Amino acid sequence: MCNIAGYIGNRPAAPILIEMLRRQEWLDGGLSTGIATIHEGKLYYAKVVGDVDTLVRETEALSFPGTIGIIHSRPDGNFQKCAQPFVNEEKTIALVENGNCCSDEESRRRQNAVAELLYEKGVNFPSLHRYERSSYPKLKNGDYVSYAEVAVEYISHLRKTTGDSFEKIMADMSTEMYADVVGLMITAEQPENIFVTRISRPMNIMLAGGETYLATSQFGFPEVDHIDYMASLPGLRSCVISKDGFEVTKYAVEGGDVREYTVPEFMGAYERTKAALAEKTINIDDLGPYLFTEPGSLMRGQLRPRAKLMYDVLYELSESGTLTMTTEERELPWLAGTGQSRVKRYSFSYKEE
Image (cartoon, rainbow, N blue to C red):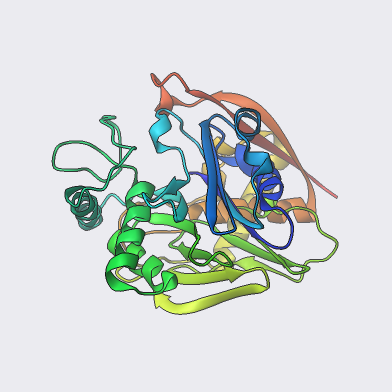
């Protein structure tokens, strides 16, 4: 899964976003990284294969102007074409997505149909590839296209053809291209807002002193003098974010179902994980057996917020005791043969305060 963040406030967004991503990138990310900001009606964006430090070293990202922006870290970098954010051809909209495409036949059919529609209209897709293990939308000619690139071009298409608001378009796009994702979008047309749709992947919001922060995990939030509000954004709903707060709109993502975890389920995962981490250090990739009592699913209508549960449990442990986070380099078997199969990951241990 990727890690993403957003910021709107009165200060330069780029340094804040870079630090937010640096705080959480080794939860699951670090193999490609990208950022987008808006200033005076223009998008500024950059992306690289590599981690946050690579982005800072190889681009001008740290000095990008603007007080609004989004950032992304991808956990497999086997093809540079699929690094995010993606920007539409008119260079007016930038989008980052975190999650996976659903594997059921109906979701696949719809995603492929949207990609084919745009391709037939002449949209240029720089992310076109033939990676045989790709889970992305597939064109009739056999090429695959990044889900996020199809999504940003579909948003642009709907804006031009319907004239609807971006909050409605985000919900409509997510309905038609239903997937286990959360997306953050910014646009030069409406530079005072970040638009969000969340299915089941985590997205947290923090309001503090006239600034608004969005992060995949609470670990990504910076330290502030006073937090006015912090919560998880709701699933299956379009939200509009401003520097002063957020609105959960009337526009819903239709056609899917997500069952949130109950308090007893959360507490069970919390106690199992606490006991395990008190005995030994465990890498985040190996925490699943302690957290989850049921297998995961990417089928439409069977989604559970597994990543949200993991991050919420770990954050609660950090609040209630001493959660030690260290990094180790891991060989990831699903990246074998890509040339980028080794990546840093957090390991955790826990002690009562």
